[in-house]
Length: 173
Image 1 (tube, rainbow, N blue to C red):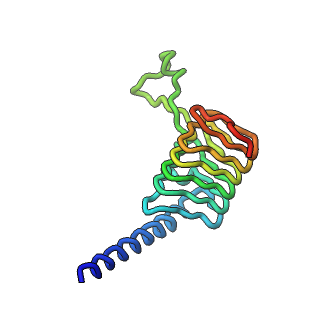
Image 2: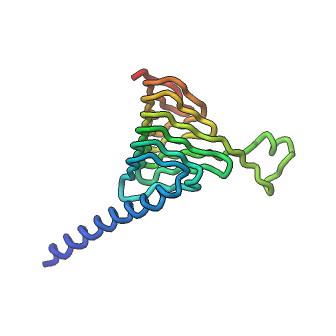
């Protein structure tokens, strides 16, 4: 009898998790600046998405649990078609403007953030734990960004694997 009750509880928990993802998807799709068809969220956890009105999403995009997309007010994140963002990957458009800070033009009490948009081309896979920093543009197709990579500059080549800190091309696919 107890195993039967435990099975029912587990089944209900799974259904609630699926329902939570569907409701989140329903809500967030309507908040994006533009969203192509067939957007999918994976995992029991949800992605963390700030300012969805500054995100443009292509067709067949897949976003895994706890992926972090953070465009600030004056920047956008553009994801092409067939992009996969794995769990715990981060795409961040904000940075500190150290030039203004170090030259005394601004101090910590003022906003010293600068925004730069990020663009990810078609057929890209951003592996688990990768971080894409402000101003990066991946314009090539069929690009894999390896797990844990810190991407600080743009790449225009297609069919490549980018990995490391800072990210660099380590293999042609």
